[in-house]
Amino acid sequence: MTTLQVWETDFPARAEAARLARSWVRGLLTEHGWPEDRADDVVTICSELVTNVLLHASGHHPAVPVRLELDRLGGSCRLEVSDSRTERGPVVRPAGVRDHGQGMRLVDALAADWGVTARGAAKTVWAVVLHGAADPEAADRGVPAGESVSGVS
Image (cartoon, rainbow, N blue to C red; front, side, top):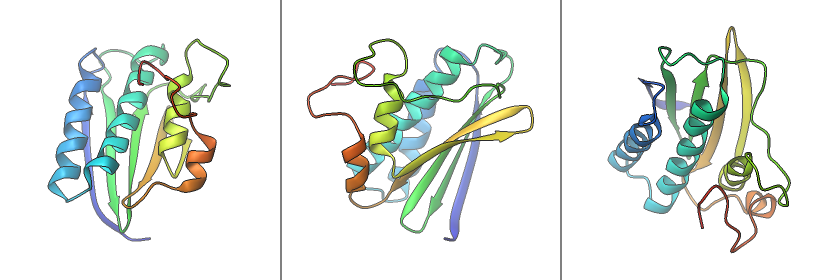
């Protein structure tokens, strides 16, 4: 797989980071011809991952920016969100659990693949979204139709 283009940016670790990140990702994907529904998936994943940094990365100092990287590949893109906390990655909680963690079920459903990579004193959570139709196997792992996850219906 050959990387066609890579974009990187930082956002302040403040409440508006998720909104700014969504806008940045949508602008890039729209500019490069991504179908709206697939761009929506990447934007949703971006929102969940940035929000996780703001809510759960207690070791993440507000002065340290949230780093985003978007790699546009042949038929997919890879979104990376990095924070300054290495000890714990996001988890996908079972459907019956109604506390934090439901957003990663959404990421799991929308992404063709995702994972966590330790990078020195930080970690990066990444997700790959296909340009074309969503991976049918991913839908089988995901959120049941009609179920609300992280406030998304």
